[in-house]
Amino acid sequence: MKIVIKTKNIELNQALTDYVEEKIGSLERFVEDFNEEFDEFFGKGKSKMEMWVEIGKETRHHIKGDVYRAEAQTRLPGKSIRSVATSHDLRVAIDEVKDEMQRELKKYKGKIVAQAKRGARIRKKLTNLNPFARFRRNKGERLRE
Image (cartoon, rainbow, N blue to C red):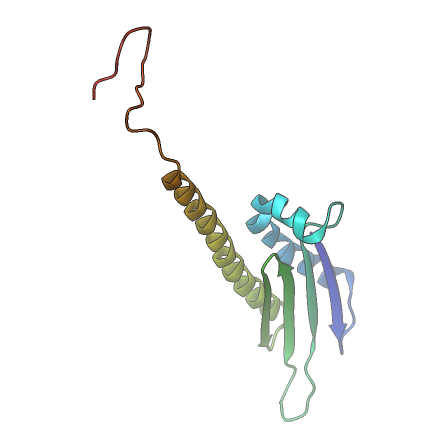
């Protein structure tokens, strides 16, 4: 997964980059099963999942103390998922964003799986066999009806 990190009013250091990549990178496992759909959506050879993360300090206008903001966004086939969180600690804000993105990705995955199962059920219903068809195990041996 490709993670693009943007900062606002703070400096991006290696420890912060590693923390964001660890937390947000763990979300990739929720969409691993949709590789063929991603090939059609993103094109072959491109990154399967791309996440844009913006972290920073809010302006001090009308707010006392340091208030940090974290925002994450990703595009998937048929849906764009975005989450925003604010907190007095930057790491807590990043954790809240990760939790919200995780909930949304699970919901998206559930819908995709349900849609595939529904399509399979419909195809199975449409496949009709002749009522006079006979099924045999061995030569001459008939199944009980």
